[in-house]
Image 1: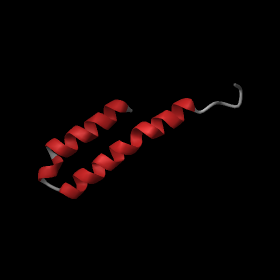
Image 2: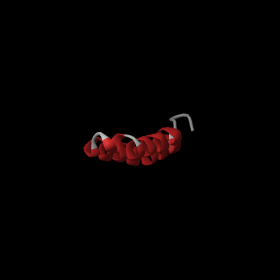
Image 3: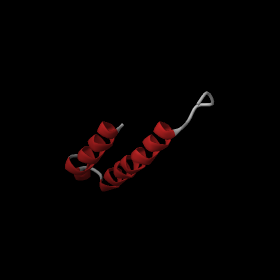
Image 4: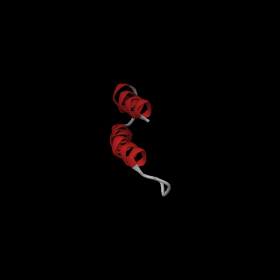
Length: 49
């Protein structure tokens, strides 16, 4: 998931911003949400624990 996050940031600000700054900002916001979501999923306990 972290690789996806970094890829989104890099693509947004090295390539996509030349075509659409709005899309670059949206991609950055999506990348911003990924790490907290990954932490929540990783720390979720199963009923068997």
